[in-house]
Length: 567
Image (tube, rainbow, N blue to C red):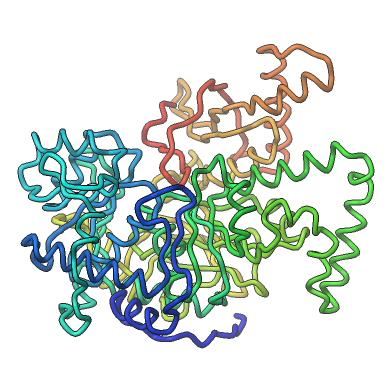
């Protein structure tokens, strides 16, 4: 196993400690910024703490006692962060809610979490109005956008404007090992699991992450993923604040390119789909220009050689025009939520972009493993974080088994659900439900979900995700789900549900002057599957496929909700 350098970073035991520390060190430096017009469009580190001390004092004045549960729902914005961080500093329990959930699921989460305060933006005021009729535990409603109290709903702006900040000396003591936030991994009644994370869970994950990746106060993070999700919240908001960097909340996924020009970010967190679309756009632009298409491969080889001899900045100079399209300052693209296509990672790196991928779960606050800028494999999840124990249970002949984790960032359990907690936490080890293996250098590789594995009639294991990754290399396949197809003799064969990529077929139609027909689509997909099958042993080959017209329903990190897929 490789011995890797560990960067020296400040130890923190809680988010409260982190914020109080950094408000002194980075006082006048920009901390958070909205790229849309909001009541609090930006704050420096001192102003951030002042707003927190005011908002917490206002909540206290309204009779909200420590340990009260606060539901939080809005777009990514400065006020979301103030609400979240106030809970951490004032010893409340925050319950972030996915803003895209149906009203019924929002109600379920607020009810199941025992929330007594609902902090929301104007976009969700109708949900708040309905909640008053249904959710009797809710005592206090606070709207981020209204200028003053309205129909029993308090104004966040008014509360802040009319409140003296609490003296830091009077802040409540925080026990870093108590529950600090409850994150629901599913909103449906009876299915919802509220992951309880402590401030120590979050702080330990931040420290261990930073020991692997250098982040500087000069770094600028563009926030594009939903902030209620642990990946964006911990890595895209808390981590920059821990590092003295700044967070800039993008207007939307559609405006990312324009927002990059304004912010000139150095860091961008995304899911694989975001970077795959970027990479496709880059190559489409290159292929449309004959000169560029001719010289691109020699340029990549030349700049690779320069990098090998230590001239790291040469790539950025050669591909400066491309870098300018992303604001001109990108230092690292970071991908999570699912495994990226290794060719995308390699391709972006060839153009001079730093690219890192990691692996984690909500239950681990969230990062478990992370690649390093100088030590990586594009088909690996990364090295286990420093101080985190990761092992493989019940490994097969290929070393593949269930990934189990133990350490300070493992959750406290599921809220009010000891039975489910006991299923996944055994003797302090969290059973992830993911299958994986370690290579000789100690990098963790993910094979797929344990519950998705297909066991063939001769006892062989087939991991659907591995086959899907191969299918997605075809430009004509947008999405796929690999499953076991039972035949009349109950002997399973491998099947695939395929969503064709309409853009690729339109481009093919225009270039080859042919009509898009069902026959063309089916024959093209069959050819792609035949190519994939050549790379697979016989028991993994796709025998049947079905064309699907609509995309699969997905989570906020763009993972397909397999339990909703009918095969």
